[in-house]
View 1 (cartoon, helix red, strand yellow):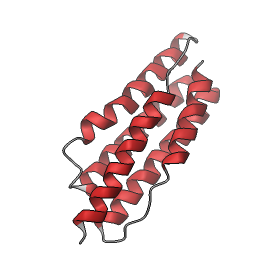
View 2: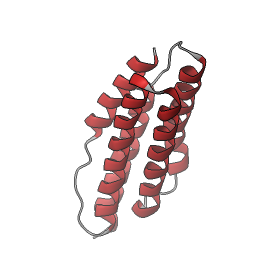
View 3: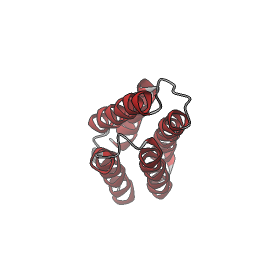
View 4: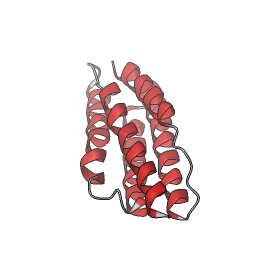
Length: 129
């Protein structure tokens, strides 16, 4: 019974990451800001490729989201200001998805909040423009 709900949640979380990637398209900005935005976009886009094949292992998949959150926070800190704040929000939402997956792996499936990640990614896009 554990595998089925966990897989469904993993697929939903993966879909949220893919959807957030389309919202995070950095525009032009200062050198550090543009580089940080580019790196955050690359990190978000890379989630889906890193996560492929992990649908049946929510614990490993949750680590992909946690690692992405840590990398996005680090890049946001390089840019500072609105980009850092927006990056921190995206990172928090990624950690929320990771936590949802960990809960599913332990037999406590919950519905992930994909809307939060999509919304925070939109704010990150605005900060990067």
